[in-house]
Length: 164
Image (cartoon, rainbow, N blue to C red):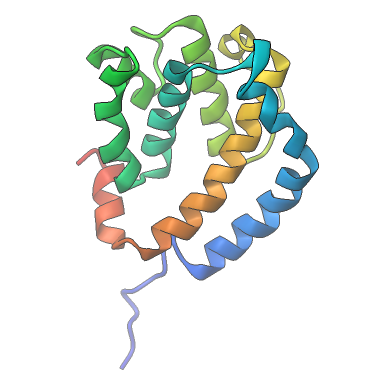
């Protein structure tokens, strides 16, 4: 019996191995850059972090994140318009730092964890330590989602990506 219509899709053991090989060495090298985004003058507040998580949920098609993060938007002060803007990567209703973080993180995710060649103008609202923190966070998210989503039904993930 052949299964010519079946393919493993983006959530397979091979994907996990590829993400671990690509991201973990960079995470180890840049580990010290995680702290500035959590503490002190370069700290990213909850609204910025949630905006990034919303964009990540949309780009990665994570059904758990897609269901979890939009309702949390109101709890950190994001309007329904801001939640939708963060999902879509558009500026309406977002602060300069929120849109900068959404744009920067989106570039990293679309680039499979690579450092963007240029800093988008919107991302200049963030400090360099904040951008480095987000770079590491998105690399970590790629590994986590490759691993975690491997166990979800692919049809569910495809429906979320299609906007369902």
